[in-house]
Amino acid sequence: MSHTSPALEIARTLVSYPSVTPVDAGVQDWIAHRLERLGFTCTHLHYGEVQNLFAVLEPKANTNTAKQGRHFCFAGHTDVVPPGPEGRWTHPPFGAVVTGGRLYGRGAADMKGNIACFIAAVEQYVETYGPPCAPLSFLITGDEEGRAIDGTRRVLEWLDARGPEAMPDAFLVGEPTNPVCLGEQIKIGRRGSMTGHLRVQGKQGHVAYPDKARNPVPDMLRLLAALDALVLDEGNAHFEPSNLEITTVDVGNAAENVIPGDACATFNVRFNDLWDAETLAPHIRKTLDEAGISYELDMTCSGESFLTAPGPLTEIVAAAVARETGRTSALTTGGGTSDARFISRYRPVVEFGLVNETIHQIDEHVAIADLDTLTAVYVRILTLWYA
Image (cartoon, rainbow, N blue to C red):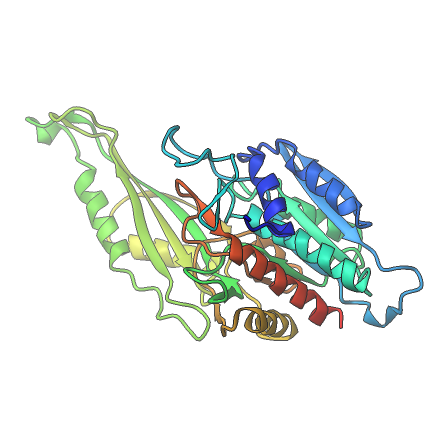
């Protein structure tokens, strides 16, 4: 007999919705109906093309109010990246096929499987203990894999405008945080991200008459060499060193006998909490200025670094993970950005979820056993948080 569990069945349903960002495809309506059965009040928040969901389960009116200030929120996203070229998947990307102890499908690991565990855990908790003694909520967005403008950030602004009692006191984001095995890592922060678009203007001309042109490529190479040699810092107790990576170099030239008129390059900096956008940007400009070359530079910061200092939230999550997985999790800040960068402006936030080994890949999948274990971890977190 094949294995089944509430988390698996929920995950299969969620994966079956082709909610490629920013399309919702009805998946948040399904989640809302499921949560309403438990007594959650669901609010659908539409911004631009994006659908978001905030659902809250309030304590009963006669509940002891000693636990006020303990509002806990599960946060995640239902949008997924495109499945990629047709015919490359072993199983249909939205087929939610179960085989070999794994669930296959786009979003199985990132992060519909995690949301399924949220829901299954809350159902199990409420069935066992009843509604918690303080509010419990879900913040679900459809804009994490996209521009991240009309999703979590906008919902947080909406909550903040409603007053301090509306904002959860702590958040757990269900991003897949583990490289290989469930329980390896809990994310307590992330590095910031800044992108620079660099341009050197030359003068187009024929390669046989260089005196009538000005080649921008050598100047661009000197600027990029200065950036490549730049050592920003050595990291600290919670963060690895900041790093700058050159990601594109282009002259838009299809002819081999033409000196290009412009040279452009893009670079990205992942920076730790020794920097912020206000200090990093002038430092990069100073490095370029020292090369003595005329250039144009546009820099944008998509998120500052953040750190949730070890405390009650990290202790509860770490204890729950250790109890259910038998592993002592490393508290890390590596990897890319996530919506936790927006949440950190308001409240403490940590991230813990499934294994990320196949996310965004062809044949993305998750181990069914991990769905059950993660559900148990989330139940344990709730029991500890509302104890």
